[in-house]
Image (cartoon, rainbow over all chains, first blue to last red):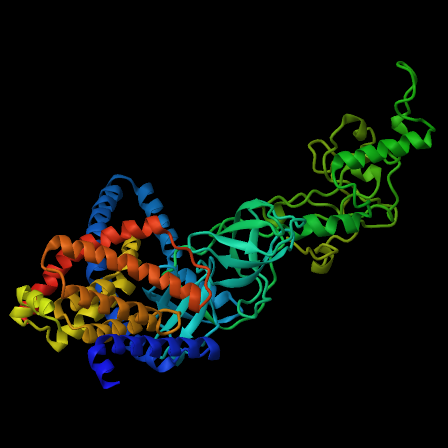
Length: 453
Length: 177
């Protein structure tokens, strides 16, 4: 034995070292324990140097770069200021826009607006290994970071924490081949599993061929994996094709520039937006509330009749039915229905119960009768015009007074009755004065409080 | 040690010079190589395929000549690399221990001062390193990672080209120390 060990000492040492490491690997794989002490030592030895290098780089190379860049920008701005004041204003505007687009500010805004509790971190280095996509961030367990936490940016998810050390954490990016996360499509609510491919794109797996996924559709986190809260954007579909069992859906992650990230300490599920979202960075206003939701309810019109053409068609159809006329049946030259008998077109004003006079300054409901539609009602307030300057509708003063339309009729046939004339029109008789010479403020005030002046 | 080996050893200027890297360089050089690997590719992604810790291991094994010390040196560098990855500890450790052992064994039989020999050995050990790591990942961890032989060959040539000036620099550092 001694002869063997002395003759093959080198080989024996090699075998012992390899065997020891094989046992170490087997122990880690079986117990799912990564022997953190050695890792903590290595990471604690390396990450402070990395942080120092990053600080040095930022304050040396970044300073030099900024100096030369700003030198040219400053001189150009000076010339522009001297030459044209308008360009000066535009320059200031663009500067403010650039400031708003600053990543750190966007990150802090997102952090403040997100319901999830997050902690900001900076990427300080890559992990080793050619196939793995992991990075180190400068926040560790002392900042509350734990393994399994989600890492996101305002643009989308970045990855998840796989190891948390005292001063740093190891984050597996979503492009890592071993990464997985539950996702759901925005439009069709198709659930799948996001997998990294080792390059820029990711694959959404386990989606049946029968499911529908469109090109350009957005995927969001579904929250099924218990790591990523529901509702974080993941990316946009760039290619879809049917596979043997499951679809092959390729997604380009929306979070591409990863410098500063947010680690989700305490995640809160969010709703996945229903409407189509534009690319990050574009703000879309919400739809006006009154135009969509109020009009159909207050007019009593069928939900399908939403346009003026539809309403007009319905009016003529009712007129034809009343005169037992069927459109499209008579020969050319036959007598058409008498459209002058459409109720509400002439002096036979609609009863007060049917007409809904609008309050001043309030767009009011859409007309519910054909006459009201033709004669017109109060127009919605003009945008940008003060309520006092808006065309007013006189409120009913007594029982006999019918609601007067204030909008100028669109066809001459509708102004045959002088009472229908627009009081505000030139040459029209002045409106009747109130019975009391001095009206109280309550009387002069509009009958209904404008909800949207 | 055979007579043939002793004769070859006597012909190697590395062995006769008796130059030894000091302990501080033994720590600083691999640490710098690992730092380069984890930091620089952030700004130059292409350099992610530059395996400086492997080249440092090869240089140490070729210059020291002792297989046992090369095994431990490679193991230490490999474990440090493993610690900075999300793989189990020992993957890089085993591979670099083997590289160190074989490089040290080869250094007894070749004139490693020759640039051509250095280039060929660096290329060979890079390919061996990548291939054996892929085998371990598949066999021990069951990972279905791809092995792109063509890309590995190209990056092997790149690493071998970098190894020539790097070894010169390390030799000068060793001489200065």
